[in-house]
Image (tube, rainbow, N blue to C red; front, side, top):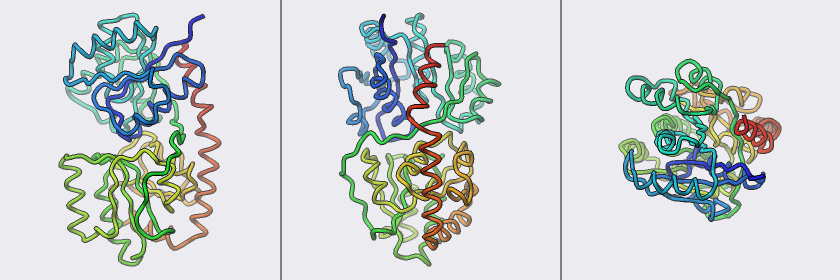
Length: 358
């Protein structure tokens, strides 16, 4: 009997949550004994080093929305490697749809990562609705996205599957700056929904009374206006000696082992991998009340939850946490237990393989 053939598709291998999950799924399915592959359509990145079986990897170097060269190469790869399921992550869904038109026997599972998708409208929503007619299943990372998919999209099989956290890379490369024992880390690519500005302003208020603490921004940074705006804000507020920017890093386990508090300041989310990684690393956390964050973190029991886009409340939460070692210890223990018990790798793959087989 042939092994079930599945390929993960992701646009890049930068260190974002969707990218991390795609690589972890590809590696995990290999361990589960499946014929597992991964395809990157547009751009490689640091996560390439985390792919365990390079022989089951293809990079298409796609340069256009509809790139016939990439589509033809991908179709050939699917047939040669006996792949029957495409697991498309985030914005790679349109590429998967194009392949379906060329190769109708393929089955598409779309993984909907971004909480802000519920606000899609106009032409973008229309295109997504039309493509989902051809999808076999949609996996959503929170309940709000599942309800939205059932109501707005045309795929019959809709599932809610919680993300899992897993440190696949244990190398020690990145050395965090600042004083040991007083480091706050923020794992997030520089994208508008991550709202770095809110965090930077909150930290600028917090640092007035807590001068020894430092903030460490880890995640992809580019030449976008959003990135430039936040880098300029750090300079304008005179925080260059207190806020450090590292860009994309893949030794996340090592980075978090050097940190003392984990934060997320997003204004929209699904179920952020970074938040679960904070839990695995035994960090006390502060997160905004978006997506599934408040379902995973119980306020004042396993962390602190604050309103999004509210730098005053975020600053106050930072002040509370850094000035109470007991709270940090209590929150980190409770959250670590929750992540280990409810967001395990084993549970995730059992549910995922069942979805593939339905």
